Image (cartoon, rainbow, N blue to C red):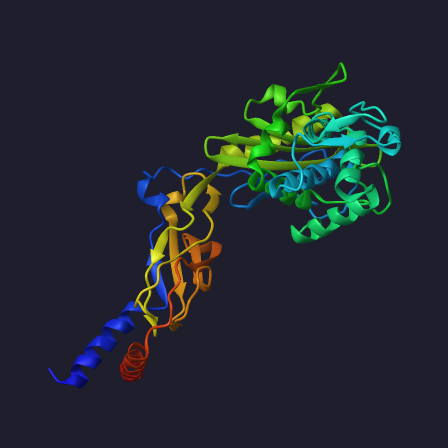
Length: 401
């Protein structure tokens, strides 16, 4: 075999190893026994101003109505207040045992209360419980002052994080949800925020399921009635003002599927519970969520040019979930679209293509493919040799086309 033929043969092998699109069976579908498809009825219509139903893992929206309409969120505002407390706990800037001085401003705040007293020192842990479980406006203001020096700068933090989380129809003026003309949010935005509360800081999420909280000898119940009625419901927050009506953000988990519902503008505590239950029942009955790929799973090993090694391990940097109609999972297929010309150096996390997930002929999801390892640049001889191989692979490709 001549040197030219050897290089030409090597180039052919490299060409075939770097095809742009690679068909990939979905992990979960290989374990599924096909079943008759579920016929999905129209989504329920609710006696509410706005609502949404979202899967907490995949982020897929299953049902929505006026979901981007800007509405007063009332005490559901406190989800952002609690989220920022949890964020600071996670960062280590505060601890649950830290004691917070209660100002007269916090003590005098009207509306629902935890009943803290001016001049008291109250732990962050107790205040977080007071915010989430009994919707304490006094506790919310106390934490706003502790974290930002006052409620106004804390509201500025709330808005910055709302923007970071993609809450495009939200603006906060306070930490409590007390009425203000420029204080608003949407069902969609509140679902996004709840998704982050659940997924970003799971170690604090159990507080949202607690039915009662006692402080200073006063025992108060959680106003989320579904915590008593449905054992799968474990959060999140209620709200009410005259302008907002009765609102409820709820989450429930059944087996491996977690849903988030937001219902805004109902006419009673009972109505918000019943309308929320309709959404959750519909979602669990007619849809399912599957984990398709683990974070860090190797999905391909494409050719790399000019590197110390010739292959790169490629995968996803987060778990991949898909929500789909029940009993259609055997139709799932995945496709990898890889960059044809991967050149060293490559660093962990570099984007190298996309993962497309199809249900039948419909693309239902797309994720970035990233490098799972570093590939350093090879030595001079290795780079020159790869240049020759790439040159001849290009000639052969043009010839065969």
